[in-house]
Length: 314
Image (cartoon, rainbow, N blue to C red; front, side, top):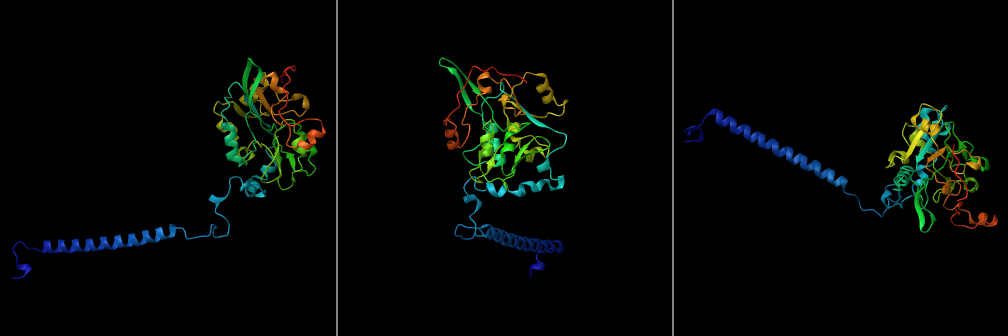
């Protein structure tokens, strides 16, 4: 008596067993294929033994010291993104005049703007395009603390442009003052000419550097990084040529101040609540070039604060 003759056996049972076996075989084949693919993927993911260099013979990015990739990212390719916009990065927007309003009553000295600028513009260690000095005013015991956000003022009449022997710095149609790193040879003439201590020599590129109002962002309809990240909303960006702009209207209607208005540079960064002690005598080092300063009879160090001058309003 064979298994087919056993009681309860039926064709349905035999067919069910066949299908179950077939499905089991297919599942096994699929699992084997998945294992093969996973093994291949993991094999590709495993880094091959190396001598500390990548396939091109260069050190991996992770081993490159911070800031040393600045030069490769700031050459002429920095202007490539505006090729479709008609060389916008160099000429700027016609009919606009960018400016900034900083309300010192809202600044808490958190340095968020400083950090954002560092990340956005890949600024090397030790130098800054914007910074917020923490200043102590007065004489003990009558002292007070103040914060003074600083950056390039993108002046209406920039003294830095006139002194550049290489023609490396220019002003766009919309007022943003730019520097061409391919033309600049780092003579430092513009650093000395800036009355706001806003320029410096980049230690990586060895050329002049400064705030650009984050032109790469403004050209794409974004705010400068420092304005975007200001915790207290102390920094506001505007088109000074547009009288319907709410920030521009605030500048025109309110009592605002400028740094060192007597220089004739006509800065386009405005302040609310700028104290008399800080308006004409900025804290900090006026230049990076100690030899020239000594020749002029001016020692290196913090500038003295003259409290005898009254703040002038625009």
